[in-house]
Image 1: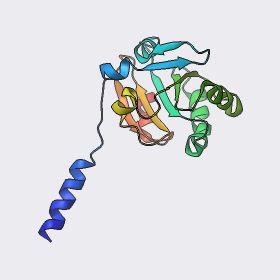
Image 2: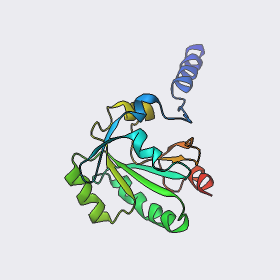
Image 3: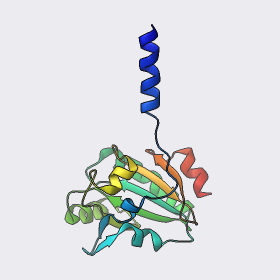
Length: 160
């Protein structure tokens, strides 16, 4: 019984989700690609929206759960008109991303993360599942770090 308790404590401590409030320098320097094929680091992307709330949706056009969440995101876009909706894709190519944006009529800012799960941005997030949602406040602080459902109460609270 004693060993079971020790194992339980180790599992609980080891599985604690991190909750960052600022992007790491490595994450900020990660290279993304715009829909027109221009390379840009994440710092340049996120700095475009200083002074605004930003909902970041990390997704891929092949991801069933991502597509299931899109109607909720579309509803939020209509409700929170002052919020920037930034879509970061881990699709296999820009062509796949462009096709997915068109097929699912995804409105907002779009960038491809060429390193997908394995780069500095994915490492910073501890990215192991998509969709993944973050909210960045007007001061550039991450107010929601780890949400996997578009209708998560933390997201709604942060967007109000």
